[in-house]
Length: 258
Image 1 (spheres, one colour):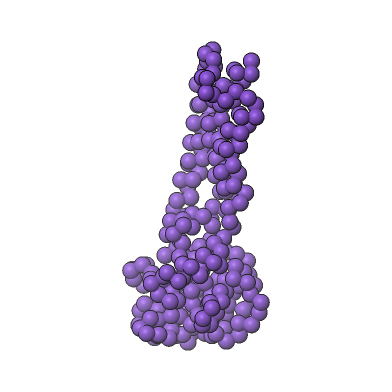
Image 2 (cartoon, rainbow, N blue to C red; image 1 turned 180 degrees about the vertical axis):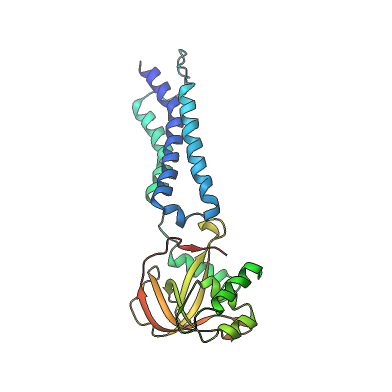
C-alpha cells in the first residue's frame, strides 16, 4: 500500500509543480509585479506560458494510468523521503514567488552605471523619425508651463544640437528616483529595459539647486526645474536646476523603454 502511494506521489509531482509555476506566473501578472521584471512586449507570452502549463498539467493527469508494477529498488518509498523530494521541487518556486525583489537596488544602479560607457547617461538608440517627432512635440509645448518629460526624452534631446538650442532653459517636470553618487552632484535616475530586468540599464540627469530632503535612493520623486545641457569632455549630460521636489507614486510602468 505504501509503495503504491509513493509511486503515485512521485508521478503526480511534475503536474503539481507545473501547476504551481503557472499559478506564480498568473499571480505575477495579476499583481502587476511583472511590470518590474519584463518589457511590455514580452508580458503576453508569460500569460500564454502559464495557460499552457495548466493545460499540460491537466493532460498529464488525464492520461495517467496507475502501474501494478512494484517501485524500482532505488525509488524512495518512505513518506519523509517523498516529502523531501516535493520540498526540493517547490523551494525554487516559493523563492521566486515570495522573495523576488520589487525593484532593482541602488547597489545594482551604482554597479551598472560604473560599467556604462558614459558617466551620466547611457547611449540611446539611433535618432529615428519617432524620436524626432517626440522631440518636436516637447520643444513646441507651452513655454510658460513645466513640460512633463521622461529622462529618455532629455537624453534623446541631448544628442541633437539643434534641439538643445531650442529647448535649453525650459522648465521641465520629471519623475524618477534620486541617487547620491560618491562623487559629484545628486542625480535623478530611471531604469531602461530592453527585454527584462536582467538587461536594465540606468539613465540619469544631474540635479542642482533645491534638492534638500532626506530622499532615499529607491524613493520616487517629482522634480520641477530648468533644463540645461552642459558638455563635459565632449559628453552632453542634461542638468536640471531644481526649483521644487516632492514625493510621488511609482509610475504604472516603473521601467522606461528605449
